[in-house]
Amino acid sequence: MTIKDLKPSIVWNNFYSLTRCPRPSKHEEIVRKFLLDWAAERGIEAFADDTGNVIMRIPATPGYENLKTVVLQGHMDMVPQKNADVKHDFLKDPIETWVDGEWLRARGTTLGADDGLGVALAMSVAESPSVKHGPIEILVTYDEETGMTGASLLKPGVLKGDILINLDSESEGEFYVGCAGGLDAVATARYRRKNEPKRGYYCYSLAVKGCQGGHSGMDIILCRANANRLMARVLLPLLEKHGVKLVDLEGGTLRNAIPREAFATLYVPKKGVSGAKRAVTRIANALKDEYAATDPGLQVIFEPYVCAEGEVCEPGDCKYVEEEAAKRFVRCILACPDGVERMSDAMPGMVETSVNLAMVEIYRGKFSVVCLLRSSVDSAKAALAKRIESVFALAGINVKLSGGYSGWAPNASSEILAIMKKVYKSKFGEDPKVMAIHAGLECGILSGAYPHWDMVSMGPTLLSPHSPDERAFIPSVQKIWDFLQEVLVNIPAK
Image (cartoon, rainbow, N blue to C red; front, side, top):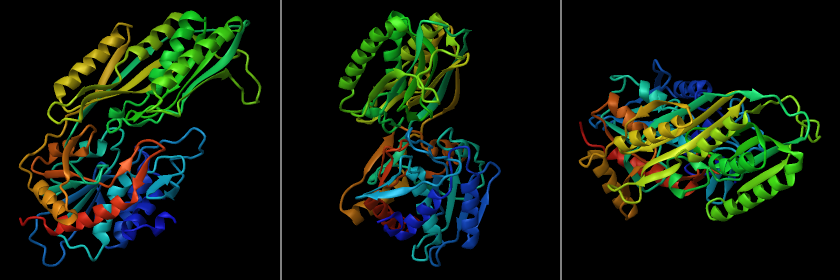
């Protein structure tokens, strides 16, 4: 069985078309053109706004013209993550999918169901002659994953809708009516490099691999291992007690993905190799015990650095980080807040405040750490930012804060929420869960330009988005498709 055999075929065929379009964040040119061409082929009014969002307008089904206009919204970009041993160019290659029982997966990469399935659902409403609905607008934003840029730059007055249904949530049967705000914190510094040691050292590589990673909002509550933090735990004793010198370090690839891998290049004294190996083994065993439940595939690999020619390298052309600077940087990584800071009092079971120690780089004179902060409480987010600034300030390192946005506050009197709850109970015989999400949804930003919009977010069930383990629960797509059609028929009159 392949993706083309899945039901509902209209939704899966549209999603398949999106998997053919390379669409990592900030590189949406191909998928934007595809969406506009797709609409033109079907006689659907469509255009790209001044910033690059795609907007489509679909007239009401005859007899439904008096219903309020609904905006179906998703984002066109996807998170480009792959396993280290997978060859894939996200700027050129399509996503290859396979059916694993009741789940659809990709082959060693992210699937792009976040939010390709949401966009596919909206496309399917637009082209299906059997779906009854009032006036529809489709808003497909760009660069959601790395800054919500398209939503932030959407101008007031472009859309005429009254109700927004966001299709970017990841648990069928759950309606989201609030979300966390976010803030980026970037610490940067320069450092002096010293010439490589000529004698008495071997070149070694240190890798932390096999962490599960995941979405830094949705999955942060699972307390999975952060490869950057674990790398610091392994590396610091080597620098402090075993005379090891740090050449470079790199971990994590995206601000909103829990880092799965981190890599360092080291110079190890020949006389201290056995001691360094024992230290790494001891710490690695402790880490594997600590994270046995959340990250059973965790690996810490310490081995001679192998050159491209297949030979073990001696110190050569690479300078190393001055010893005290290296210790200072690694201590900052170890001390930087990471993970869940506080659970919500207002909504039990939901994270209120968290931070993802997302990306670390120490390379050729430049040190940088990128963190993504999230909170549904703006004051808590500000206090966490001040803590991070303080940690790095103690080491003389500057932190720049940017990209801040507030959360989306729940609307207890939402008309569309009441309709969706009623339809869900009638159709499936059970009540949906109504909740807020510890992640950034575009609803919060869009409400700034369109404060009158009545908004709810929903979507099919996805697991491990933002990681190569991303997968979509196939039966949930049929359920969402059936439910969405019923909701559109029950939209209130203008």
